[in-house]
Amino acid sequence: MHLLIIRHGETPLNVARVLQPPDTPLSLRGQAQASALAARLQAWQDGGQPLAGIVSSDLPRALQTAEAVARATGLALQTTALLQERNFGELRGQRYDSLGYDPLLAEHAPPGGESQAQFRARCAQAWTWVLAQQSLLGGPLAVVSHGLVIREWLQRGPLSLPAGWASPQSIANTSLTVASAAAPHTVSLLDCSAHLDSGVGEDKQALSGG
Image 1 (cartoon, rainbow, N blue to C red):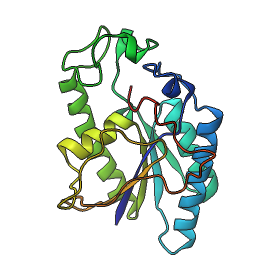
Image 2 (cartoon, rainbow, N blue to C red):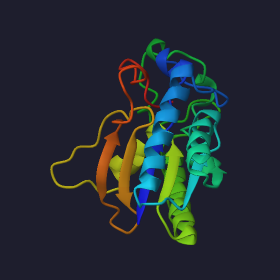
Image 3 (cartoon, one colour):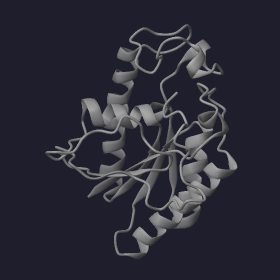
Image 4 (cartoon, rainbow, N blue to C red):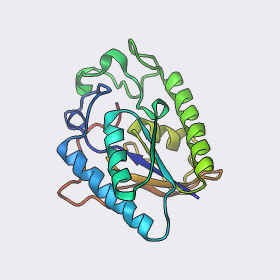
């Protein structure tokens, strides 16, 4: 059984390199990316590897991405706050490049936000919850979340990369990472956005995380 781990589509604030408030929706290009992802997963279904369900962060940018997949596949969708992006508190709404330091790597909690330790603990809880949902459904599970969550799973576990593979420093919008649902959760496909053509491909200057 597999877990299909997906980052949400592009938002206007990704492109503007702004740390995003929780209510940030997808941009028009992000919606097109979500539709392309949904078509890819529908083909996955039709190819004899039917998904059992979809789980998602409840933040709009992830939820809209997951809803596109749900419409295409007819699968039920369940949300959880555990899969949300790291909470940057009062930094949300500010331009990343204007801060003078990298808040994505900072260990301390910004005012009203999460420290790295708190975020890592939540990511571990989210992973435990995802595995429980996959076990209940008994089949491959699509998991829609955020760049820093996916990067945490790749860089600090529980995802296991084959020898010679390197964890990407940024996760592309609507990229697909496929891993075994069974320990050691070996990755067989990493940060793949082959479903995006040149018209809806990722803006390379966009912020991945936050």
